[in-house]
Length: 103
Ligand SMILES: [Zn+2]
Image 1 (cartoon, rainbow, N blue to C red):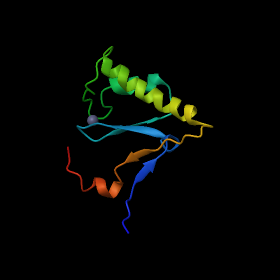
Image 2: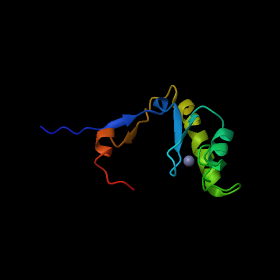
Image 3: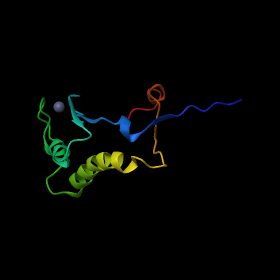
Image 4: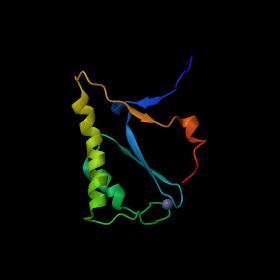
């Protein structure tokens, strides 16, 4: 008998998004139910600790995509309520991630 281990999360499990500065490691946590403005502000702000720019620029498609992703998470939770279809996101299990090569 062979077992396959899968790590799955449901949208309701996502309570916040964490954005980490690649330069200093400082993290900003944005609750997933907060508005699109919070996400856009996070994308456009420089790091509050080391002041390194995020790399996002006002009015670009990348900021739009970033903001829409944030808004979609909140909308997705509502869209899935009361449905017969259950959405699960498969992730790399935490202990397996440690074995992955670092980017
Ligand atoms: Zn930083």
